[in-house]
View 1 (cartoon, helix red, strand yellow):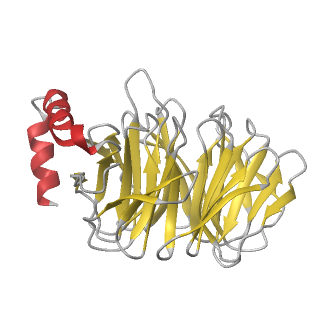
View 2 (spheres, rainbow, N blue to C red; view 1 turned 135 degrees about the horizontal axis):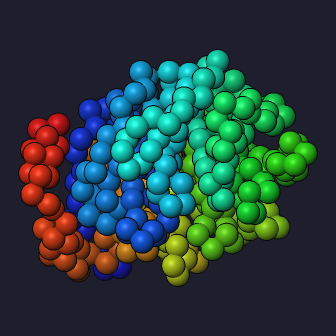
Length: 330
């Protein structure tokens, strides 16, 4: 990417507090979708390509720290400071179930087969809920050594990956035994963990470091020092040749995966960047910030503004005029 090209992002307003988590659905027959978690307690669903607002999930009474979509983007889940995780109908916005906890819930994730939901947080307990039996008690995995910050499934739902708020490392849990089978050692607490679309790499951010691990043998493949403390990193899903990282300096930087060289720097946020994620097509990536906005950046800026603007024009339907006004006022 030519550094002289200025990337103009799509700016998505709507949240009234910091955006702390972003999650893209896989590509579905209806396109792909982006869900955002915010301290304003209202997760929002958007068209993943255009950033257009689709709906807001209303029901939490505290900050929402994590939100995700199942593989078909038909259901959403959220983890909140109100001591609950909720399962939502992503088409209607209705609450399908509320999973009560005894403390703040920081993370949630659907299994690949979409039958299970895992949650974790300040209780230091990983809970696996069966979504076909919503009233059944969850399976509790062995106690985590620290307060849980991130959760991800791996190896076709055979392994759970977790990191802690207060201690370094990523722990890999065997779902059947409920025990930790491996720990990926890091100096600082891991604030972001992502499994690549092809299942080859685990991308982590800890302190001022971004690391890439072999997702099958768990060896460290690459480790790069960043210009500042970064809170999140994401690997481009198609070629895997670049990754993005964002953190305390408010900039979203693009790096070469093989060399670690910075190949782009996107400025625009007015507060620290809490989360970055590549879209499933690899053509764009989103960033969420303390400033309450989501920005969607095109991987190749030369076609970003005109083409995407045209797509947005085509996507609008009559009744959405009201929605657009609502968002611009927010």
